[in-house]
Length: 155
Image (cartoon, rainbow, N blue to C red):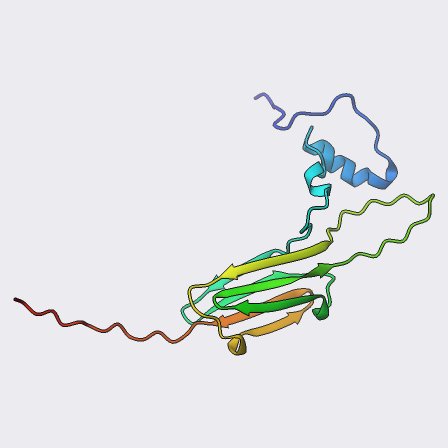
């Protein structure tokens, strides 16, 4: 049986600085793919987008947004008709001397995520709980009227 390399290796082999040892190994595992894509390093208008899980049941819609490192005053939840919006800003304070070297892979910046539902959202009925960096939102569905049968007459 012959073993084949699935991922191409980099050539020539270079030694990694001690600071980035484990990252260097991970980068080498992926071959010529960069560890961080250049587009991800750019600073677009919304550089940070929280991951959101959505679960729908018969009675409600549950959203769970990951907002690590934020305080509850760093973001806001708003509704407008059938639109629910989570927006805010994730800030990172960086202090550095001229001789320091720093590599930051944490994302920061303003963010905004909007979700449209198929009913008018009642802001008073939405439950929002923020705990341990996770925002849990529960949107109850409105009561649906039972289907009515329309009598059809013949001519």
